[in-house]
Length: 167
Image (cartoon, rainbow, N blue to C red; front, side):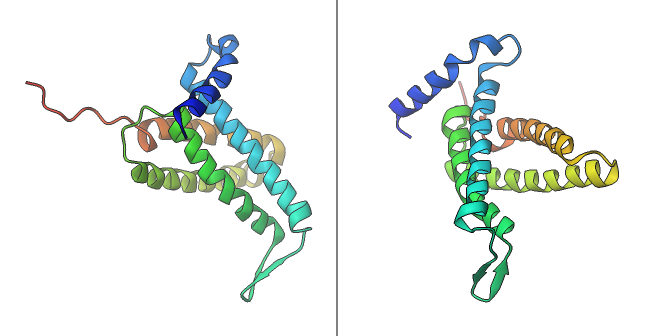
């Protein structure tokens, strides 16, 4: 992403930050804006893929039969994963000085953990506690988003301390 595009996107996002600045800092706001946009895009791509691209039909590839809801997830994930990484790397956590390949690997590990956490929390809230699925999904999304933000800031895109020796 070139500097002009980055600055334009950040200016647009930051324009909406002042009313929320009492409660959340700029980086957190950027994370919510980028993550929320990526999540909504993921849902739209999933919905479109499932309902129109796949027409709710099982996909047959090389002898495999893949359910349409799973293949729609594969399609949406193949777009939202790299987009989410790029948004986090270039817009939210751009001060990170880790190498890009390290960030990408850590991001993949984090996303895998978030998928597992979604499953575990939904099973716990719906099957374990008997809560309704939609409120359970909302609470799960909030918990996983908090975990994801803290993990990205402190692990995936952390800033390594300067290792130069000062004399």
